[in-house]
Image 1 (cartoon, rainbow, N blue to C red):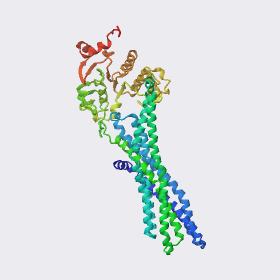
Image 2 (tube, one colour; image 1 turned 120 degrees about the vertical axis):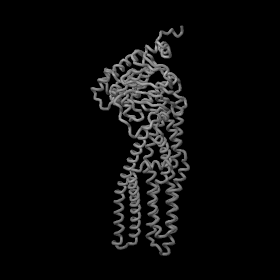
Image 3 (cartoon, helix red, strand yellow; image 1 turned 45 degrees about the vertical axis):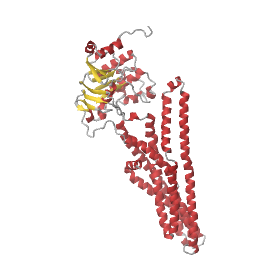
Image 4 (cartoon, rainbow, N blue to C red; image 1 turned 90 degrees about the vertical axis):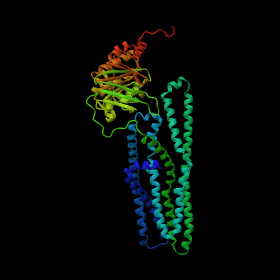
Length: 576
């Protein structure tokens, strides 16, 4: 119930359109009933060979309902489809407005295939919220009320009989369908998510699966999931196939019982004989509104499951709450961590423990340490992906939680270890950093980043994850993005971790040349050309173990000196 109420609250701006659509459905169904009833009356009356003027009302009614039914049907379809598109657009906007603050910290808890299922299939299934769940029952209710009022004026037994059979078609059948299909939609969503995850794993890990001889095992797992998906879909289809015939049985039952009730009324003279056929035709026509009602049960379960999965995202609390009235970005861009501690959500183990340091504007700082020391966590905190458990992080003297998160991130050009390139052209991947950049600006940035041969290849396809390019080219494209972003702070997070020593030196030379007088914060575990930095912070076990220049730290003969010696000294052969 909570899911339905929440979804109804989300589509409240479209209540007017929904009401118009439901009224259009009622009037359209009413015109169909009117056409059949007036035609039945005209035929029955004409069989008595009356004067022509006695048939004129019936003739006009048939013409009116015959013409109006087509016009009204078109208007009803137009309103229904327009309302559906408005609702689905509103739900998408609502969903993505809630999704954005969750990235990337909270979204990392979801599998990519699961997120894709929620974003695409689950939201798409909600297009039936109005057209197949809300509109048919409400239209059937209005038609029922109209039918009961008319039959009740003739005989209350007729109205009561119609009510009983309409309750069978409109309440009992849908309820039985819901009970039969209970849990099917939930399991179907789970199976589809698992299947898509398995497919994605196979596509992305094809080389590893082939090398390890596990490709057939993965195919078999996907086949099992596909078979279960088909079985669940068949279960749903089985109900769909019998719903309309059962509704027809309810209609025929109503016609038979009402015909039996009409016989004594006609025999006693309480009702003219020509009205028997008219009433029975009207009863049959009224069930047109009930044909889609049992199917609403199937769509209701699908929508409840889809809505529940979507609400899990929408109602999730972001790790970082955005301030409603952010301060303007400061004019200076020095960075300070003051007594910052941090543990990842769900863990009590501190990754950073009461660390403090300051990076002056224009200063070049390196943060080094072994893997798992908390270096990349510093980058995540600085970019506002997570809030510190305690302590304060400032930029230009202002706490970053008081700044607009988007503007803060635009002021920091980040080159990370994993450069994500979209399956698009080089041009489109670069324009992410600066959508206003001209081709001349792109070419100049490529030259500065050491990719002059790419200047005439802007429309080259980068491939999925940029796999058409080498690792060095991908990193240089990340540098090109940083150039185009032209931010006052440059953050390097293991920017050369996947490169060989020669390429690493070339990339770092480019980065230092590009950074100029900007603030530079480099996070790395590879100690190469460290004398180029103004200061080096050595992170160990979540604490700053040492701080100083390369010469000072080497002279101290501490952790940094040991790391540098281990990485840069001549090593004996492994099998000596």
